[in-house]
Length: 290
Image (cartoon, rainbow, N blue to C red; front, top):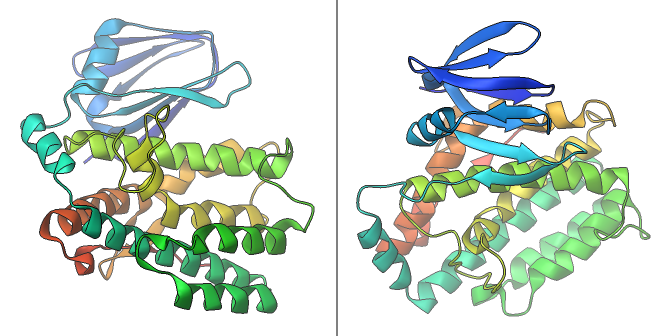
């Protein structure tokens, strides 16, 4: 099983030979491709061969490319992630509106619950109680937008009443980087299973190629938020820490495993819930706040 996240930070050449990634820089290194879960190219001074890219895709390695300030900018996504892609896509288009609304309600509930637990962690009792009220008010498909109302209360409690997600500041840099890593991981898992990231169960943006991933990410965002409020991050370490987030231990289906593997189970469980029209099949991820 793959388990390593590789981050390339400086000028080098990356090649392929005998099922190995060959790093040619200040020193030469070899890494077995079967060990790699994610390859992040942070430097724009990296050259990489098409043979290596093809092999990484074949082995379902997530490849993320960063811009000149080291922020994730794009990712490599395979055309074919599953042997019966046509069947999966037809199934995806057949998901009924009612079950989509039921699943979305469950996703919103779990997101707000995780946000509430973060507020409990920092002892924001009034805001936590407000989110607890919202949990009781969520309707099918969240037609009253309890998610949006909860987000305003939540972020104001975390970062102050003047905070906005549109601001250009360090907090948003932390959040955006972490969310991007999660979104990319979800994109990978959805494509591996043979489904389309473009077709969401709630998000329907015409210019958004990741509508479904944006649906699935919602209960996971509070884990990134927790890392921001826990004091673990600073301007120098936040990229490394948030990349390593995929390797922390979490709980899913009463089992402990690394977050990256738990995401696989989480994504699969949502598709099973949609296909079988049973919300109880969803397996949400739990994490400790210490």
